[in-house]
Image (cartoon, rainbow, N blue to C red):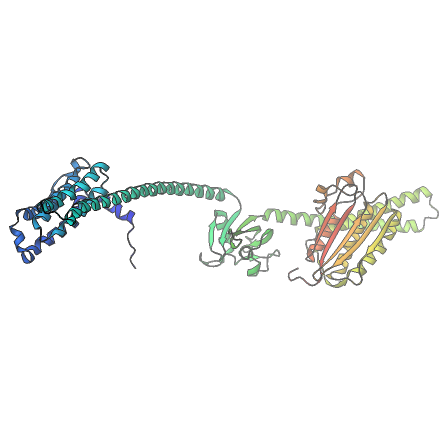
Length: 555
């Protein structure tokens, strides 16, 4: 269906026409009607051709229409063309009075010049005078001709017709003023919109310049996966991820691999798909591209919501962390190699000291004490080497199965009993039996031993260490709480970082390498669980481990 032209479009088209054409178009409707009347007059009212006034009226309208084209209006005053509708009033008066009483209705033609004058914007008083006086003078001759036999109908027509034309003029005048006001408002709105559009384009250009200047890839997609925005770095990532020969409309995440750099990620695990599903994540590591040009990329995503809270898209950020990942792998390999080289001589030292101490009857007491110190510190050094080896291993494996946590707690308390007695610490267990979880008993036992040992170690003045547990249909929560020295909240937030030690522990000269809790956190995360710390200086600490009751897919 063809679209209708808007009033604004018609106005713009009219302004493009020449002044002569504009005047002629305004005169055209009245000229057409008068021309039709003139053509049918010889057939319908032949007697009117003998009326000089009637013939003069027809001739005047023809001359006025021709004058619309011949007069150089563009050289005259801007309101000079209004002489045409004024002379139209004269022409209509000649027609009407020359055709009376056969065609008294010709007076209605006065509405055309009245509309023209009212819409022209000429002076209000002049317009109103012409709108009332013109029709009055047109109606006056036929009324005067009936003198002195006036009727009420004659007087009514004489007065009512000019008043009606005056009302028409006022209505058109008000509508014209209102339309001009609306046009000014539309023009102002158009200017404002153009200004806003220009500012928006400038801001968009600035935004894209900033995004292209960053060294991370940024892409915004809608809920259907259609790309809304991408910077230059992101386009390079998409080219690296796309298979050779793939077009721009084909998948851009074909060569995205898991952390082993070999296993292709399934579609629902890829960053863009996760983001489109409404997930919010950070530090999600993937490998992009094919060997030997694979790059490690850390991804983060945030969903986009509308005012109603509905998902409309997502923004995903891709950061190249290949150098960092390779540096960490080299560091882990170095630590692993050094730890391995330390282990053999340390085992030899400890073994020989054990043999000497077993046959120490003939040794002086001071020598035995010194050998005991060497033995204790060698064992401590061996524990540190074991922690370093475990921490450096990126392949910390777990073998979870249905495990009774209460049995692990009982075993851990038994192992820590001697240490607790030396430190005057009471061990209390509040764990229901049985308490089932899906866990690796060796690794969770290791994590629990570490937490209980720490709780005793950081309670140098005695106290109580309580091991409690609760379970739900999905999770088991195991808490180790002590009444020891505690730590500041800002230290509690960093306690799971490698090699971190709280200020309170350093001031109390409590030995440790700051690796145990980092290893414990790794063990819990490999189970699909988590660990948290709550602590305050002088009020002890509480470490809470969360384990799944059933197997978690992908854990």
